[in-house]
Length: 161
Image (cartoon, rainbow, N blue to C red):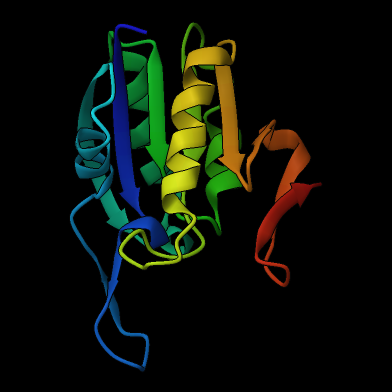
């Protein structure tokens, strides 16, 4: 992998909560700062494409993500995305040739002390370097084919569909 292109779309991973009523804003993407603080051994570029909770991501947004990937010279992509519609977006991105694309997010914001964001990002960085071209969902410590995974909201994790 010569360079990793990271596309951020918002979602819980970048949420900032302001009060007990759960009012939030999608903040600046945290992934670039995290990777810099970990002194990763690869080059990366962060493209903050959207700032949306994934329940508001639509096919126009998915088409924009697809076009950015298809027009890019890079072959390795990491997309941070909200977990509620991550699988829908992954399915929409199926069929992009010659690119390894991994999607990850968080069930709790990266700014929280007990977040899964850092673990998921680490898993996604490993997966993007080792998986063959295609689209992959990286959540709950596993690499998923988007056609075989779903979010279990009650258990608050991803599982086989």
